[in-house]
Image (tube, rainbow, N blue to C red; front, side):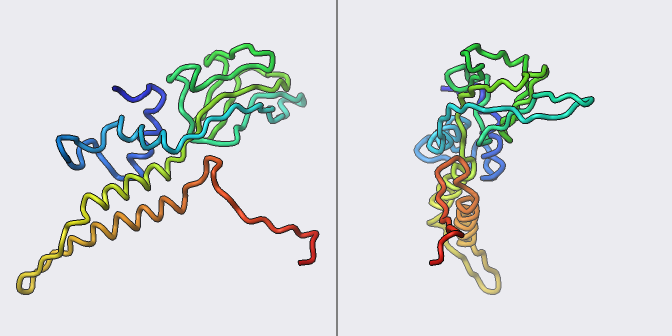
Length: 195
């Protein structure tokens, strides 16, 4: 099965973050990391949203215009995957064609060519935690090299165990950046309470 058409840029981001090619290693006749395998990791860290978004007003030649719509999240599956994965509709339900706006899927931004006159839009999208997917891959790479051992012969040595440590360090780094899809928790303090 081929990866969905709108996943190419997300897969590329995860490849970059995890520093993996398409043939890192082979285990039981399965070669890692194909686009499908990375898509599977991304799908584990996807949250689907249907969000009503209002535009940001800008002043153009002393007149207020509305073009920019900022979504709550970025790293989105692209429109090429079809309307079940991505759609932009007016609040009356009219599907907005992709020719009427320019999306920045990574930043979660839509810029309409024409002034929308302040109309809200209903956007359906899937947001992905690329850092969590990359962390999964770094941990899988660590598991793959976990049996590597150091070799010392005379004054020469090979510290293969460094590969495992490096993979785990990278997984921790990616974990520290993950949680940007809406599953993170934070502790908030109320300033109006004297506790």
